[in-house]
Amino acid sequence: MLRRLWYTLSRKCVEYIKYFANSRPDFVDYYQKTVVPEESFIQTILVNNKNLNLVNDDKRYIDYTNAIAGSPRTLTVQDYATITNGNFHFARKFDLKQDAEILDKLDSLIFT
Image 1 (cartoon, rainbow, N blue to C red):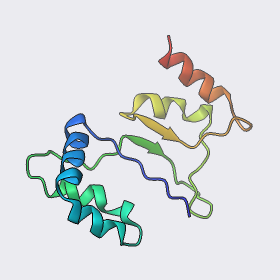
Image 2: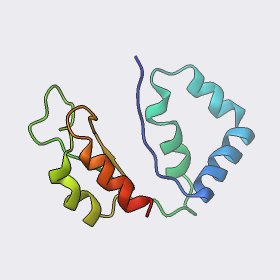
Image 3: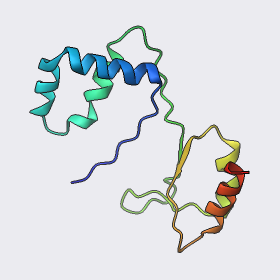
């Protein structure tokens, strides 16, 4: 099963994860033998470093209103104001066949 996980990490966090993984092969080896390691590997490394300021805000706009089978609602041009007025780095989910206008508007905002 393909799992999608999203992280918004600072350079400091990424560098620390790399340092930690390189310096603790026993930790990496342990996680290579676990079921679904991606659900706690990075979190365990970061949360145990008291020098990092972790914030519970993934900067994503995902609308689960009337979700079908746990899948988020497809965003349309009606969501443009919400997406652009929020403090979001990413949004999902979009469907080109259903409403390409929202992506055109977002592209126009970003690339002009």
